[in-house]
Length: 177
Image 1: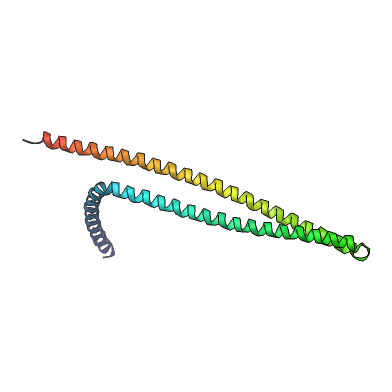
Image 2: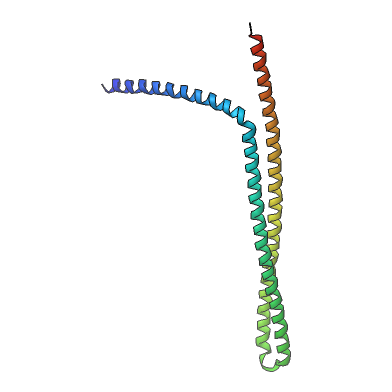
């Protein structure tokens, strides 16, 4: 009875599968007809989507550049403060060489080291900005290439649709009694 039950299940599955395939074929036929008639609109939507993505990337890059500019301004201000501090300390050393020259020398060295670290950080940020600009330009170039490829593909699809339309008209004319 178990084998008969399984055979009945398989027959029911085959029947359901055939109905599903028929429905799927009809749905795809309708979809292909709809798709061919809306292809330019879909490509326009795709191009608009790509443009919106590019705009978003541009806005993000601009934001990153603005953030980096602010960081550069902060670091430049810090650098100027450290330079001023170094100058003040140097003057104090000249005025009080007797007791504090060693302490001031150590502080100056610390400030020089800090200044050096900040200069390295600033240089690193400048390099990062350059890399981001290069990446943005590369991405922009890739997106332009993609857009051009989409336009070529669009033209090819238009040609195919036109040729199929002509073929259908020719077949229709040849089959007229």
